Image (tube, rainbow, N blue to C red):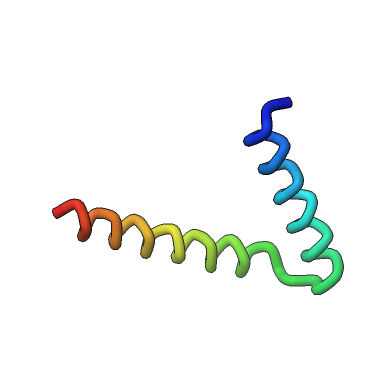
Length: 49
């Protein structure tokens, strides 16, 4: 297992534990991440321009 894959896996495990602990609705979390990602994308485009 490559270091990057292992890191991603640990990250995923951490998130699963986090969800179970705090019972955050998955949909709202995905929505937040998606919107955040779009924001990052826009910022990136802005800096490239």
